[in-house]
Amino acid sequence: MEHYSGIVGHEAQGGIRLDRYVSEVLKLVSRSQVKARNMKALVNGKTAKVSRVVEPGNRIELSWDTPEPTELIPEDILFDVIYEDDRVIVINKPQGMVVHPGAGNKQGTMANGILYRRFHRIKNGIANSDVTMMLHSPLLRPGIVHRLDKDTSGVIIATYDDAALSFLANQFKHRKTRKTYVAIIRGRLPQHKGRIETFISRDKHNRKLFCATKDMGKHAVTLYRVVRNYGSYSLVLLRPKTGRTHQLRVHMRYLGCPILGDPLYSSRDPRFPEATLMLHALRLTITIPGNKTPTCFKAPLPERFKAILKKLKEF
Image (cartoon, rainbow, N blue to C red):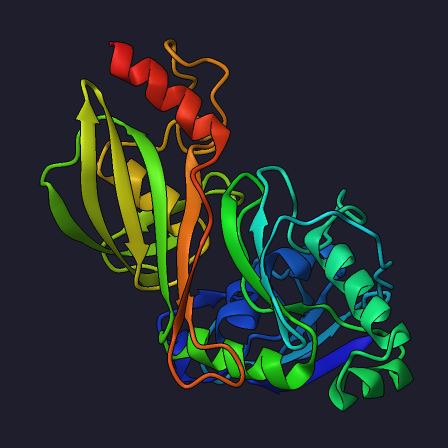
């Protein structure tokens, strides 16, 4: 069981739900975890629901369940390796592969496969001291630096030691990387190239979805360029300047041109009813440990793209 007690600060001026204050201001747990971890609350000494509105000066006392530690199981997973050395691995992630275990996805994830490769390197004496030291830890963490949605394919990088993980994570944090995605969208964008700048927040009606807003949520910027139009469809390049969840999918929907095959932000397309999410991480430019200049890693266009584009050319 975990606990917190304190006085509600000025951030709650005008009133704010307690669960929002916990997740957005105190950042103790995510809003979804408030319920999942059975959070109990006292406000000014009295039992209260987490949906209660609190104000500056209120005293709050919270308690919630500590999650059971999850042991990640190493699995021998065949990766499409773009690049690998003794510090990092760059993978062309297939569509459908989950990056990190979660509810309903405990095995077969990229993290399981990375962990297996780390163990293999230790066993064969090709890991550096940072990796070997991790054997003394109760859990050996995979070096996942960033993520791609399950249905998004393409370039993703991971590490074999914590120093490399920190080195790469710092570049993502300070936006020193360059990511380029390719997508097939339904519709035509307003200009040949442009900039989308909004805020992105969770959908009030469906917590699994996100939406673009004018002033609520997290700031999000995407650059786009049209490669070619095919009637009412377009092949586009997308470059996120920020890294918000579902950012590219939300921004395309915001412009009225959802990504073809998107099960969350688009309806089924009558011309391509079997299409899956047509979003692919095409290029990642990043400086890897030991190098002074950035390297651009590329993942070739997937077969699902080639099949759709072939049909579009026939329209």
